[in-house]
Image (cartoon, rainbow, N blue to C red; front, side, top):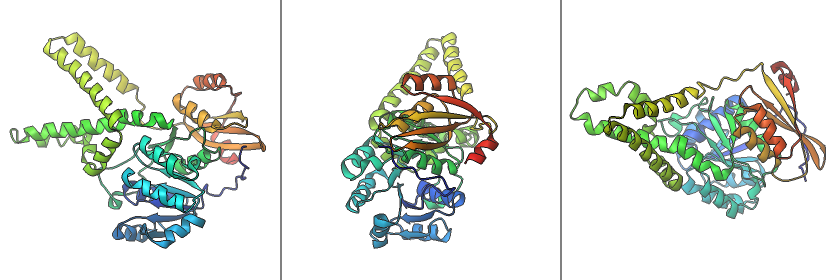
Length: 391
């Protein structure tokens, strides 16, 4: 059954959010929500007393508790509708167990860089595993902890959400509304594909950056000018290597299989360059460099969608599980960015899913894939003014 619809009243998607872990990402999330949606009540949980004090002093949370504070349990049992787990994967399981013991019925999401392990824990621990929607904001800083947190950390960043067939239809729109209000753009990925994808674009690059810094350090004593030269473009391109070693060690082993495969593939690519160099094969070297240069130039310079070229997509929804996850994943796969998403309920068993898209991605492919998946689709241009009025 499609869940009963709550009419849009201009209120926030959530009333009370609890953030477990007030480090760089968790505290930045609190600061961003406070700035974007000040009516939402925010409570933080952290083991460090100073961190809790800073969160309160800066006004990022309305309350801040130690994990064993009875107020945490009281809030989960009756006060909050979203729990965001921004703690390391190693300690997340204990919080799943607490949520299970307290019979939490709201939405649970997380900010972890890997998904296979945490999703498996959620599936076997939570009393309502369908309410867990894995999340991953792809934003960070070389600064760690709450001292590096800032409200604009997620501006223009990708935020991965991983709904599946069991995810209630209303959950994705609510999380989408919250995340996009922070300036982030949502990408829907099947949770089973997440770890391999982020290994290629995030985890392998981090190891490569660390390797390049190690290479420079090995030669620094021989060439005193080397580190002065490294202060230019080299420093910018290896900035991520300054991240927390403990955090990234955990990420590496949580995603060991995908990371190992990616590093092996990179070794092969570097080997191709080395072979061309050893063979004096200029044509091969040029071809390898040209292939990379062409792919790099094809990357978008920034996320700057036109606010005057919006497209509304309306999709009748039948009474079946996973429909929202299926549609949003198709949209992400063809590069379409969903600016807003709503569910207009017609009856208890039917609704219309309404997506507002920016001028990105392949709309033709979106239409074709939706039709091939059995959906009927209608498209209509929508001006920014009309969209503001509708919202």
